[in-house]
Image (cartoon, rainbow, N blue to C red; front, side):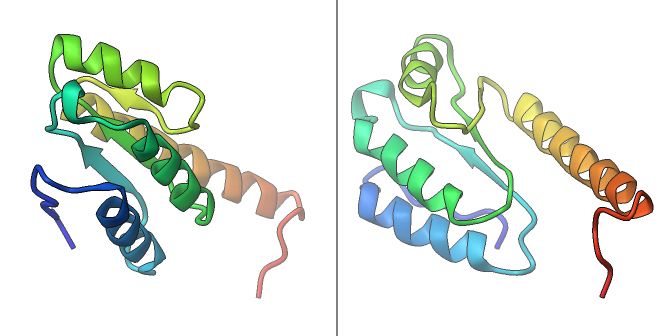
Length: 119
């Protein structure tokens, strides 16, 4: 499932369907969305869709919006969604790595202290 191209005419229904399908796959540990759309095509309902779908799963999702002015506009729209937004794919990938490491270390510490039950 790596990568998926939704093409430029993707609407909120397509984003919702694809993001939900990807996140429910047990082989997917996290998602890096790279928004190549211009801010003029970005709709506020995309933030709602991203947030609603992502809240259903315990997996990290990071949004990347390459570019200066577009990044500023879309990052502002995404503020408060709980989905971090970066202006380069490298920063987004580094964020996913950091979230993975945090989760791994947290699980290890909690299980060693007996807070997590093992099957």
